[in-house]
Length: 323
View 1 (cartoon, rainbow, N blue to C red):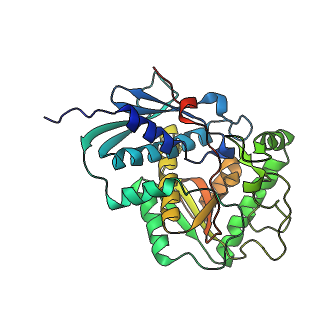
View 2 (view 1 turned 180 degrees about the vertical axis):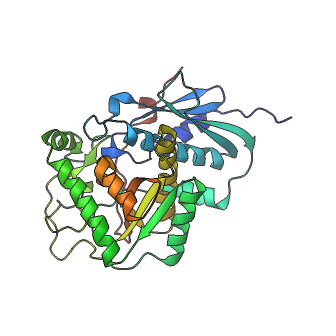
View 3 (view 1 turned 45 degrees about the vertical axis):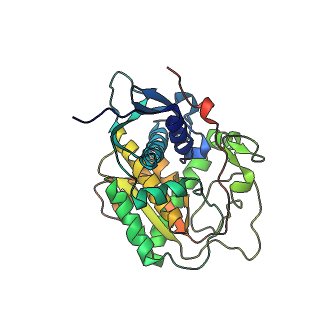
């Protein structure tokens, strides 16, 4: 008979500290955490859902899935194997995932490396260097997504990139034509990094330009640096799931964070281009472009980047429900 696994307060704090380093739309951090018996619950925080950019809650579910992946790694480095149950309680629709430790075991080398990458991972909205993404990193990205039950398409070459560019640009233009969308983006843009949520203007990258191959969101109005053009031949990753249920969107978040930490561990950087995911017609065009029956859940730009630093996060005490 397997002995019960006890989750100490110190371990729980370490788990939540790791979980809040997950990415979220506009760094809105739409999650809360609690202990349920010996398990860790990852819950959606409806008050932090972006009503214009995320009317259905898809981005909240993806963010909570990413937070659950970080939490699972933190349990692993504390010597605890955990099962991840998605949407385990129909009576509690805000409960996204429950991580239940079920055995004591040493962390694997991969888990240890990915956990170490949590503190370093951040979105890089600056131009990437010209060096190509190594073949080994490409293999690891595919494996990371598949491990979580997701799929990826690695997009390279002028013709394929042009297709992606057209889709991203169409979605970007559709979104920015909406004044409410632009107002919401401004509301989550911070003038500096003294706030514990939102995107500091300094981390938002240069302002998007009309000729950009892959348009980015305008966090602030920083002009581009002369001679620092955005990569003309970018490496793009499209991540998706077989279907589009709420559970599969959470699963996409698990896969997304596994991929992002794998990229970070490989010495690379990524930024997310979620605009085509937020516009139904362009999300379908993205699936059609690859002949995929599944549903795209995120688009990533990946490459070599100069050192940067993560955006701020709220403290543990502000995201934990003590009940």
